[in-house]
Length: 84
Length: 120
Length: 168
Image 1 (cartoon, each protein chain N blue to C red):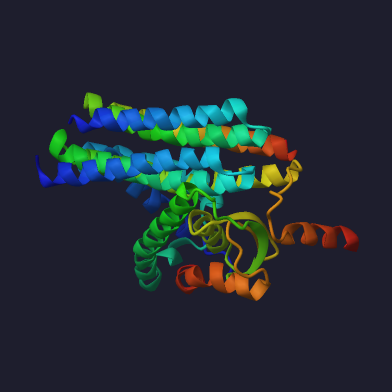
Image 2 (image 1 turned 90 degrees about the vertical axis):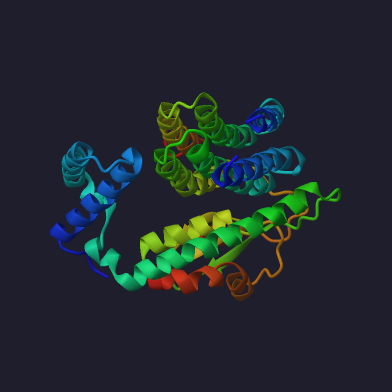
């Protein structure tokens, strides 16, 4: 159980690294890719938090978050493509 | 410390390492296409490891089997949707006119688009 | 392959929804099953027309066996792909050689094409950029062969031997 803190730390570092790309990224699509990766990582983070607090309800939150993030990224991508 | 906890913890560690690698690729690669190459694949495998790992870990830690089926649903959903969003993003990148990296060798898609315009 | 009858498509949708419900609630309590069946019937009636075209034919034993055999094969390919990508990211010189190549496929089914495109995206150094008239345009991180035949041999062939049985 001590290990879970280390995993959360690694995930935090990973999120910071992708944050760098969000601020720096030369084009809009670069930023969007970084945000997409961040949402994927956040889904994993929510599942880990569910284990940390031993609350199964957080798993449902993670599922709904994954669905909404997917829809958001698709909408942005269509907008950049000129489809909307 | 049961066997399921050990297996689950190992999977979670494996997944977090791939999360880290994916964001490292996001920083190191030279253009948006190559960034996407490294980032989406590793992040998907990392999620698979973390999410299924938590489900297996919970068998020993929480003492409930219901976590496994739920986490498998989330993992399958991510496995189905992540490549689709990667595909939408890379097409958006191409259509919004971002050039390929200067070291790229071929661009067959451009040739095909030009061929189509020539026919019309 | 033409469309299956409405009954068969509806039943297939209901069965799939019901299995997802069982996974989500992960209990075999009779009350949970009843409410799940009711919801599956209602949602199935609303969505079967967009959900499937071939209906119950998807449960053909041969297709299910190949589908199950495809999962470990795919996961293994995905793991190898990620180790390859990790090598490219961690290597100080960044050994990449990217480009967009063209591939062809023998698959005709739309769902099969979708699964093939997703599999390509998740495995060795390739992302599907576009699919037009059965031609795949693929961004490849390490172009070994730029011709159509060579690229197809490398990228689509390994998956097709499974997918052409699963999605005829």
